[in-house]
Structure formats: structure tokens, C-alpha cells
Length: 110
Image (tube, rainbow, N blue to C red):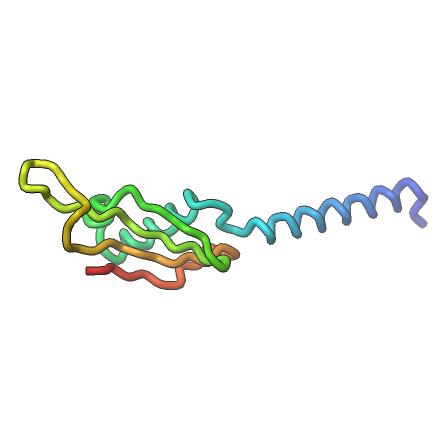
């Protein structure tokens, strides 16, 4: 038979474990934009190539309805040796589920 001290200890352990699970579920497997970008970039490189994805850095991410949308930055030559983002072109985009980090879709706009 368990004594009162052991029973109390077990009850506290269960309470702490449950609280940790609830907090991690609320925050999600992909807790922030930086993590979402890293996951998306890894998959986008496999799809579009490292050179293409590197040319679209920095990537940004926005969370809506527990789905991270990650997208690159558009840059084009400005004709004077630099770059501009006022141009015709496209960027890579990915959607990453917050709860498990699964990449739901990847596209490249034109």
C-alpha cells in the first residue's frame, strides 16, 4: 500500500505532467515564425533548389488559424548593379501546420 506522502507525490507528478502537455499543445510544435521559416526553407530547397531559395531571403511567416504561411522576398535587378522589390516576379510560399510541423503545401508565384 502507498502511504500518504507517496500518494501526494504521485498526484503532483500527474498534475505537472498534464499541465505541461496542455501548455505545449496550446503553443504548438512550431511555436514561432523562426521555426516555421526553417521548416519551410528546408522543404522549399528540395523542391526549387538552394540557389533559388537563397535568392529569396529573408523569408517571413504569419500564423493564422494554426497554419503558418511562409513566403520569400522578391528581388529583381534594378539596372544599376543593385536590386529592387518593385518588379514582376514571384516567390516561394509554404504552409506549415503549427501542431505538428507538417508542410501542407508549397508553391512558387510568378
